[in-house]
Length: 232
Ligand SMILES: NC(=O)c1ccc[n+]([C@@H]2O[C@H](COP(=O)([O-])OP(=O)(O)OC[C@H]3O[C@@H](n4cnc5c(N)ncnc54)[C@H](OP(=O)(O)O)[C@@H]3O)[C@@H](O)[C@H]2O)c1
Image 1 (cartoon, rainbow, N blue to C red):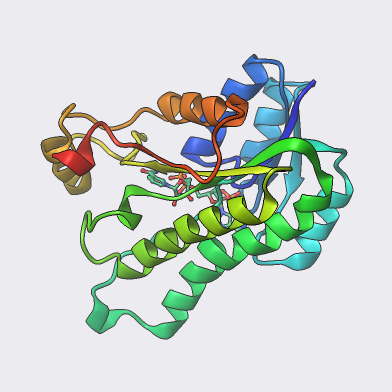
Image 2 (cartoon, rainbow, N blue to C red):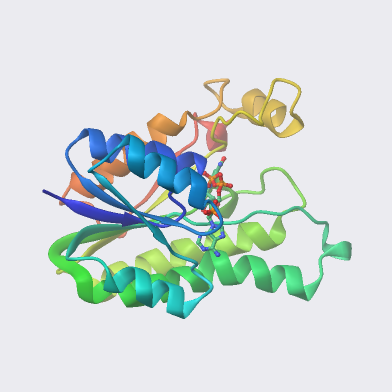
């Protein structure tokens, strides 16, 4: 049985990935930070294929405790991430640091701790965003820069860990979620510009993650999954 760890397993993308991989026979270590209730509900619903673990990527001891309780892994998905929106004039250093600490340093911390557990032939997938590739919704320079760093990190790490471990990044466009109702301004901008005129479904993200995990020719790649937003 193949085994993986996903950080932020309680998120929209995380939950879809947990469901997708367990349906295909994988065992999933589901890392949560504040979402204990949701993580434990998924663990119960999908038993015995899910193990929920507290995993705060800002806290080394939380990472150490989580990794200590795992066996060998075939896959790490660095999915945890936070977002906020400020124009440069009102963007404080603390907020930039907070976003970079979770979205970038958190990946370094977790990857370093997990690496000894990753099997030869295993892989790492880092979740970036189309925001790393083009200005998207405005007021998100700090988030966009953090996701740009994820792309650079992915490419450098892929070169460093080859040929033992493959490392790739997935850059989703706006992913459909209940809070994005038809009146949502970000949704309107995304649907207008994307050539498919719709948002990405979380199951489509999970499908791409599965392909990236299984395809042994893929390393150092950044796959854009955005309903054609970046060519719109
Ligand atoms: N949604 C989109 O449209 C979209 C598009 C492109 C890229 N992305 C990226 O995809 C990833 C998932 O996005 P999402 O929208 O599905 O997420 P989300 O629903 O906003 O949830 C954020 C996730 O990050 C976790 N998290 C936050 N701080 C953490 C920390 N310190 N340690 C560990 N986990 C932490 C949260 O865990 P708890 O709930 O347990 O606190 C939660 O699972 C993110 O990296 C995001 O930037 C999202």
